[in-house]
Length: 352
Ligand code: NCD
Image 1 (cartoon, protein in one colour):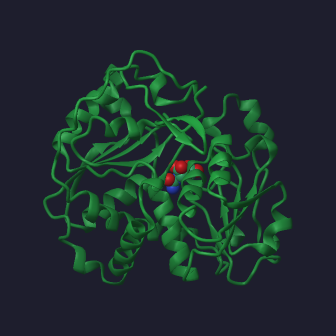
Image 2 (cartoon, helix red, strand yellow):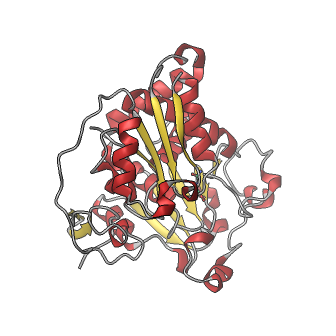
């Protein structure tokens, strides 16, 4: 069974196929209105979402399939204490594809061990969000005509922003991408991502000033400070509003630079930027729907397959307090090697 847990699971050729089909759908959406006829998609949103949930719903509707699910776990058996395993075993028998968002890191990987239908990770805590990456790459390729060789500035909460982590993983598959990682000290990229970039020989610099690097960029990827992932309100207060992109700051940018943002925006892009032709964040959300349609046309067409039994775990080997293994103790203690380090196979954090 092929799932989409992490963009790293895809080869560049596989991504190219998804992108090419997304462009074809964009050009003639009516031609695809029956492409997933009879298919049923489950949307399990254990954490709030607007764009991703709606985007996946409309993507399946536009392909002629149907959807069920929840947007609030309090309205499901999860509120009664049901395990992730049981929810997934049941739902994956009902549905042909399961789209899942969860606040715990590694939750989508955990779900894939028990699912008889493909799992699509629609965000797992501060870890990964691969279909947002599909939206991002589709927008870059569509408007700049290439991804290889670009200079990209990732700005804001690089510590907790899963869209940033997924995008970096994906850009490892392209050639000569130069990264400017723009964040205050407290919100720098996590160490496991830095180790990944070094292991992949990716060119990156870490800076604190957005203005200083603005003239060098082909893409500026702004992100929201992820308030809900802070341990204390005081820590959030110290960094909130740290970067605000304004029309005046854009004067230093290239004429064809793209301003992207996964949305929702809080205050990091002022509204006077919206009418600048370089602002592409609303188009990005549209591109995301087409990219998701293209993905569903691939993944949702697979036959159901009951997975082989896995080892029953007893206690977590991973120390990350937000790792899914801290909450679902029956999960097998899986580890993997990344850049010469032993890492948790669910959340990617180093295991000592
Ligand atoms: C992002 C997310 O959920 O990680 N939103 C989205 O999916 N478009 C970004 C965010 O919440 O800041």
